[in-house]
Every structure is written in structure tokens, then in C-alpha cells.
Image 1 (cartoon, rainbow, N blue to C red):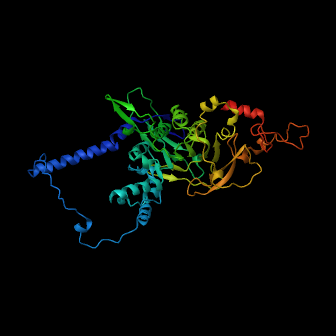
Image 2 (cartoon, rainbow, N blue to C red):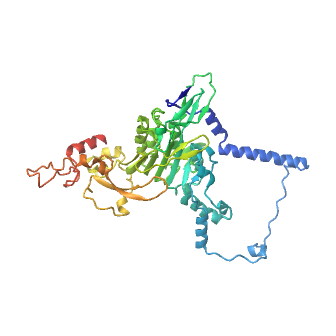
Image 3 (cartoon, rainbow, N blue to C red):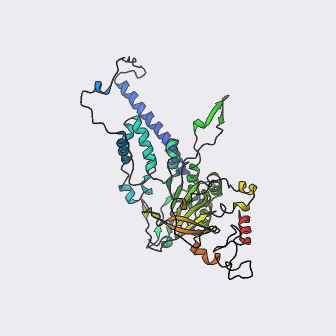
Length: 482
């Protein structure tokens, strides 16, 4: 029996979770150390050496030991510190993103190019001396980009010191949906998933034995729960420095612990194999994480591969809560698809793929004088807004630039290029101005004076006359929405 599409119930597979727990890095290190310790003890016993006897301490000499006294060879030429730091920075900056740092990436989560072209890093520099370790660590974590393909890899990133984690400004999550079934069925993603597909793609489904329990059976998926696990890993990790012991009990630090990536500004999430009409709505934990615990923290969020059905639309709206006021939300068609043992990139021709850009909550920063202090505090007006691109570079002139519009620099392509272009947005709807221009300017000629030909409508927000002036009714509707 085969099915082209069917709804998959959300789950966290018990077998996968047990494997993740067993292969936790700390547990793996402990097992390796135990095996090494046992083998060393066995070697000592075989040679008749008591492994419990400690050797006598060697008395240190009072003579001063220098490099010249230890080596009779001619010392190497001295290199200025500035040049050493440049060499160190160059050697620890990769040409490709680092995938799953501190973990071993799974081959089925990588593209063919990523399997063959790894970032060339002279990581041995860090073991040279303490100075190289400190300066090299700063270059390693600040100069490279990172891709995380599993929540466990992101969670293990907490082992990196906070002073290096806070230097990271941009990360990429690759969320590959996993499917399970306890029946021999074939599930496929339609060729309409992306214009680059010529036929339907068979999904990789992990077969699970039918268990004699009350657990949900049938076709299941680890998709939205995986997104929840990724966002949960972004929460503040445990830091012993923020816990003090008083009378035998732990007392939390008066200041809150920083998040996993406190300096993060841009987040890209690639949803892979999230087909239309395959998933139920995301769980309610998504709103708690995106809009509250991690809300108003990012300047830009890029989402690729979200379904175009109700579940994808709801997920996009919930993830918009991660953005600061006037933050940029980009929704793009799928950029890759997962096959049996690899991930294949998907290419988009001009105008073939869905691409939408939106500015989030852009009106609140210019219309806050209409709201009392109680409403402002309740809705988080104290959070900083996203940086204004107009402060960095002057945008092109537009007759429509007013209190209702805002300039933003948006990427020309989401992959392979860092080029950006100016785009004018409507603060009221958040959409590009060219999409709402006709609707926004339809009441411009309806002025308050008798001679409507000489004077247009006065904007209720700024009190000036300009294209797309905001009428009082729209300002009241905006107040009700907030």
C-alpha cells in the first residue's frame, strides 16, 4: 500500500531519544576514560607493577631554565605580534560554515559538497601556548559561521565559554523532519514541493515495531517538536557561577543567566521535508518560546521550506515573535530536500520560488505617543528596536517616504551572496510598499478643507500631509491590535 500524502502525528521517538541519551558527549567521554583506565591497569598487572604505588616527587631545581639553556640551536626569527595575530586569524577562519561544532555531524544531514569540502582550520594552533589559545579561540568563534543540524549539537555548544559564544552574531538551523511508521507504507513528497523537482520524492521512513502499548501508532513525524527542541536549547544553560551555596542550599544569582547565544542578531532556519498537508499545527510551546522566553531579541529571521498550509502560516507568525520591533522577517521556498543518505540543494530560477519579506511591528516605534505608559510597558515597549539601516547608509529618494514607511536593506539572494538592496515597507501592514501603495493612498485626496484639490488628508500620526496619510480610524484599529 502506498500513499502520496498523509498527516503525520508529532512525536519524539523513544528509540531516538534513548540513543541520544546514551551517546551524550559526557557519557561517551566517561566510557572512553573507563576503558582506557582498565587497559592501563591490565598492562601494569601483566608486567608485575603495582598501579597504586605513587612515584616519589621530583625535587625542583632552583636554577632558572630558559629556552636558550634548553636548546643550543639558533632561535627562530622573531615575528611581530600584530603579524602573528593576523596569521592566527587567517588560519582559524574557514571558507565554509562549520557544521555541528563540538559534535560529529551525521552524513545524512550533509550535502555532497559539505561532505567533500570541510572548513580548513589550523586547529592545532590552539594547543601551542596559552596566548595562542586565547587569541585563536576568539578568531575561531567570531570569524566563522555555524550550521546546527540537531538540537543536541546546539545544546552541546554550551561547553564553549560564554565570552566566545557572545561573539556569534549569525547561526543557521537545519531542521530535517524525521518520519516513523509501524506499517510497511511508502510516503512521498509531491513534485510540487519545489520547481526544481521533476518527480515525487520518496521519504525516508524509519520503521518501528508495533508495540503493545497505548502509545500513538501509525505515521509519525519529528518536525515541530524538533523546532521546539532547537529553541529550547537557545535558553540560558546552567552556569555554576550564577548559583551560590548558602546553608547547604543553592541560591540563584540576582542577575539572570545569559542565553546560549546572547549576541545573536540573525537566525536562519531551513525546514527540510516539511511538505504541505503533512503536519498538524505546531504545539503551544512554540508561542511560549518564540514570543516570550526568546521574544524581541533578533534583528532578522530567515525561514525557508515552511509549508504553505495553515500549519506553516501559524509557525511563521509565531517565529515572528523572535524579532525586535522593525525586525525583518523573510519567508522563502525550500532550499533543500533530504534524500536517503544525503541532502540535496534546490535551485530557484528567476520568479520561480516563493519569496516574501515583511517588517514586524514597525508602527509601534513611531506611534507610541498615542499609547499611555501602562499599555507601553505591558506590550514590551522598553525593548530596543532593530537597528535603522538608514543610519548606516543613505537610502534612495522616494516621495512616499514618511512616518508610515520605513527603508530596509533586504538580501537579493538568501544563499551564495551577501548583496542587499533597498526596499520601502509600509509600517502599518509590514508589507513592501509597492504591494499596498494603491490601498494606502486611496484616501489621500479626502482632506478636511472644502478645497480638496489644494490640500490632502492630514495624517493622524504625525499631523503632516503626505502620501498614505493615516486616518484616525486606522490609528484606532492599530491601538486595538496592540
